[in-house]
Length: 306
Image 1 (tube, rainbow, N blue to C red):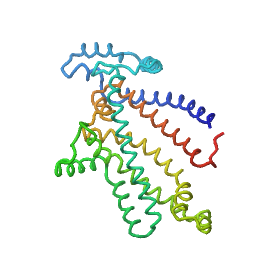
Image 2 (image 1 turned 120 degrees about the horizontal axis):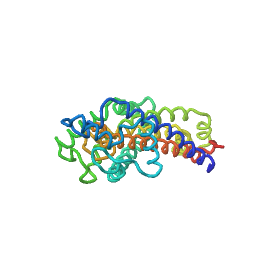
Image 3 (image 1 turned 60 degrees about the horizontal axis):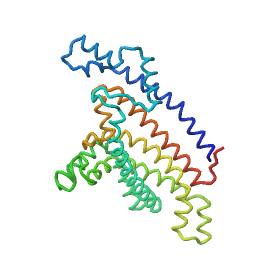
């Protein structure tokens, strides 16, 4: 196991290098002039050119990339064009907010999604099954920004129970986490149901029942355990989707997280911040998939990594 983890960690290095190249090229090839944005709409051509030289944007792309990636290896993520502060200082107060929001979203969505899926599978074709799948279809169909606005209208405007935005206290996380996690809950419910139905029809489940084992043990220790591989895979992929969801939800609820920072940075053509954020999100996604692969072996002894 240790050799496998080390191999996977080392394989992330060239992958991140390729991602950094693609991110850098994409950011610098999109329409817009960062120097003009920083200098202001009323700046003269000479002032814009002076800003471009100050930011290093007058150099060819290859020297710009080498300078940027070298700085990252030394822990320097760059300096924001618009805030004139280091990118690390911009990240510091926003990173815990996005992480906590992501944890809240994934926690409730995984728990409820698995419960709905298991209950639906056990009651296949009955009322609880149809109700669970109706909830799942609704969760998949509703865009998170629309759901966020509706939750805000109901619980904030009409009932006055929760804040419309911001994070003055823990209540500020409730509506954003619901909006972010609804789609994941729905997908997990459907995947859990399908996998459980398949495993409940396997020979080893029928054998366990024939031995007189309690139904709860048959379901959880046999069928659910073998369904957990599918659940972990989907959960890992959906955590990556939460990153994209945080951009929209943080904007809707005015949450000062990394998603909101990305949206603002794109509007100001703040290349240094955009590049660092996308590279960080890519690294986070790789780490999540590594953790998922390790969990496979811990849950299912038949999985071996050489």
